[in-house]
Length: 266
Image (tube, rainbow, N blue to C red):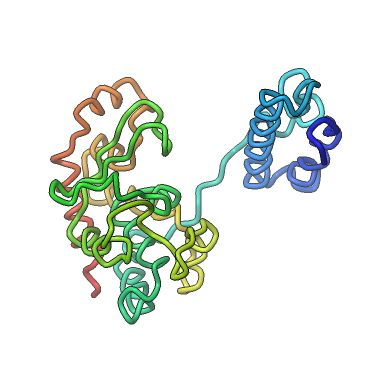
């Protein structure tokens, strides 16, 4: 469709299957509906700013879609599927056994790197060499590229994470995206997230952040240290104050301890 021809009714046709009466209790579907609406609104707004549409944005929420899509107003977001923290060494062993010969599966390398840096799947998939300081053993995520909008964020790199980085074909040039398919393309989120199920574990990629938090709670890790390791830096004023120095030393120790635990079954 041309941007100029899109109507509010067209947007509702997209959203209704996600938030209709038959799925009103499915919070995952409602969360998807909310995100889709946000994406569509942003795309059409860009089209308007580029002169591709003269009419108002039909995906705007307030006083437009709100009356007919009221189920999007209150969303109880379900936690992502995750494995029990005690299963992590078993999962890592299965992951490494599948990745043979070494380096044959860049998606598995990316998954392990994601777990050991407690990062989000998109952050790991799109990590760039200009963000990596191998000498200081730090992955510096620039503000704006990932979820944090206000802070550059340093993530400690354990030795296994560094070994993974050096094993990538891109290490020779150390330019551009770190992880790619064997054909040089971008790793996709769905492929990464399907790995646990393929190995027989009830989890998705993002769920390993929950696994990490459960580990921290069981081991009595300081809450501020574990939350900042998850990059939850802007959720409270207290945490924002801690985030000024990012508690890099205790976070580095935590990541090393987590690495030893995660690789324990190898």
